[in-house]
Each structure stands twice: as C-alpha cells, then as structure tokens.
Length: 404
Image (cartoon, rainbow, N blue to C red):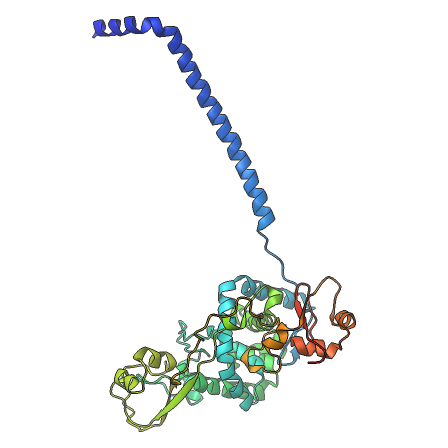
C-alpha cells in the first residue's frame, strides 16, 4: 500500500503547482456563485414584495348610510349596530363564491317565494331569511332543521306540513313557504314588529319572550342575545344590500349568468305510485329530474293509503332551460340594483342604449340630475334606487335617453 501511494505522489509531483491553482479557482467560482445566488434571491424577494403590494389589494367597505328591514329603520349610528353590520358585509362580500351562488339562485327562487309572501301579507324582505337559512339548498342541520326554510319537525307539523317516511313537505318550496308565512303572521300578532319576528324565527318566540322579559326592552337592536341570534338580522341586512346593489360590492354579473326560473308543469296524483322511476319514464322525464324537482318524495315509491292529492312538478316538455345559441360577446350587464326576473319595467335592451356613469367623489343623485338634465325621480327609477338610498363611489349609474 505504501509503495502504491509513493508511486501516485511521484506522478502528481510535476503537476502540484497547477493542481493548487485549479483547486483555488474552483473554490473562487463556488464563492462567487454562492454570493450571486444570495444577491439574486434577495432581489427576487424584494421584487416579489413590491409586485404583491402593488397588485394585491383588499378594500374596506363603505357602509350604507341608511338601512331598513321591512321599512323598520336600522340604527346604524349606534357603534354596536355599525360594527355588527360591517362584520356581515365583509364576510359576505369576501366570501365571493357563496355570494355569487346566492345571486344566481335568487333569480330562480325569489319568483316562487314572493307571490306566497304577498298573498299572506308578509313583507318581501322575508325572502332573504330562506336564503341565509339554507342558501336555497335542501340542507339538514345537526338539529334536524330541513329544507329551504330550515323547519324542525314539530314546527312543520304544527303549521300543517306532512312528514313521513315517504313524504316530507319541508322539502316542498311552496308548502314550506306557506308554513313559514303562518309562523311570521303569528309572531307579528305577538310583537307588532317585523325585526323581532325575524329574530324569533331563529330563537323561537319563547326564547325572544324570555329575553324581552329579562332585559325589559322590545327593541331587537337593544337586546343582548346569543351570538347566532345577535347576528341573524344583520346577516339578512348584509345579504339584502349586497344582492340589491352587487356592483357597489364588486360583483359583476350578466343576465345570462343568473340561474333562470324553471319552466314547470304539474301532474296531480291521488293514488299510489309503486315505482317512481317507471312513473318518471311514463311522464317523459328521468328519475333524476323527478327527484330534483320533487325532493319532498323521499323514497322510490308512494303508497298514499289516504288517497291524498299530491302535485308533482315536471319540466315543461320541449323547453330549454338555457338557450342553445352562444350569448353575445359583450352583453349588457345586469343593472347595479338587481331586482331579478320580477322586475320588467326596465329592460336590458333599453339599458344598453343609455349612458353609463361611474360615481365619483362628492357626486350624488342631485348633482347627477343637474349634470345630465334629468329629474332625480327618473334617475332613481332607471337604477332602482329608492328614495332613502344614496349612491356610492364606484357605482355604475345608467342614464337612459329622455325620450324613452
């Protein structure tokens, strides 16, 4: 071994100087590379931070100066009310996926719910309760609350809904809305205040009665309540304002982005159905569509021993939910104040021929009225802005031709 090492040394001896220089060069290159990597990495970090700070922004939300629930004013000047409202506005503005789905689904279900509320004399604002309760999905809570209106079993039965292994009418939108209206009417007879009625839908009339007696106030906004009920009305108010003025909160939707109402026909059945799949095929549809349109049918059959008459919803034959043709490239947007399909007084065609003005600092309805030579009343009508509401910076205002 020693002899072998001596031979290697003898071979390398003439190259010793060159080998030392080569190793020194390699070491120097490694140092330079390491230094350059460190510098470039620092530059990259700084560039990234600058890019992040210039590109990514999260904005605070200008709060509405006035709000009401069913015409009952909200005391937004109270700091506790302001901060509770702001919390819900922030949550629903920045939970964009949920709020976008709210906007889409409301276009389908509000037209179903609104006539029932109107028939019972219930203010339209109560439609937002079904929305915040379920998001217009047939969810079941841990407590067993079910359907759009999240009715528990005893309450549903008390207001006339059928619940069995085969039929659960809490999943029937029309019938569950009727039941909810009966609750609202009963609660209003007790409280004579719609805001307390809404709160009692969450806590129960017994729970509200106990807090009113304990705290000696009939004002919802003065009551100290559990967190869920304390948030309840503010969630309604936040969702209501966002859905009525989506552009003020950064939501951009076109009319064809919204879910259209379903074209339905009905079949009345007063006998048993031994197989719903066979029934669906005979009606020219599928079991899937039958169950989606009639989620209150809980099994694959319906014995109907009492010979009760049920109304089953089916899609109208030969109709398309969505049109075949591609939408136009630049369709007119949905107006800032959305009233969904229930509003026919302003069409998208007429809006597309108007002037679109983005509200700037210090502008209001009065100044825009003078600027464009139209009345304040017309501006409010064209943009669905009620007399109590003000426009906000960044809001898009449409000014139609005055001869329309």
